[in-house]
Image (cartoon, rainbow, N blue to C red; front, side, top):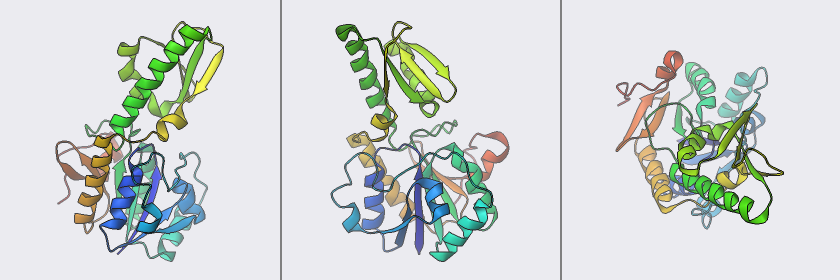
Length: 264
């Protein structure tokens, strides 16, 4: 079987996931750089253990991600062409909710697809997501460090990050007692309402070295996926005390996963 793979979200531990996927599998893994744009433009790489060895415990990703913005007209035809070109039997996407519409359309066109929620998956699925603990930990570290930096240096610092991390920021608000200002697609965090120094931390969060818990989770995720890779397409692999494959269609009308709709 040939598995197509792309990442469209923030997920520390992704390198461990890829490494386990190629190490434990006899399938051909075709990775597409830069998310959906890479699949559209045919930025493909055949991935093997030699490529992943030595990187499996590091942050970032050997398969670059690029946040989904605008999809060109005729995207489905071009993507279908590239999937056929590489004889992809299953398209595996590690991503956020912005991938759902594209995956549903491909599934409707007959492509087998599985979505694994990245840490910045914003919809309520009540599931532990890849890299979740690492992102929370690193965001807390950044807030603690730059709050102290503002006090000791005399520089009024504001942290800037994208709206994709909004849920994480809300969780931290009571703990770190900061001002939060949302402008367009960005969030600004400060401690006295004024600032003269801006620090963008999206890259810090995305490239964070994964905690052991998230490395272990990524490895287990890959093993479960391979053990059930013969499932019909149109599913999402989530974890809540156990791994489940849920239907993507449950998002079409409600935007919320229906946990009773489990694929077996």
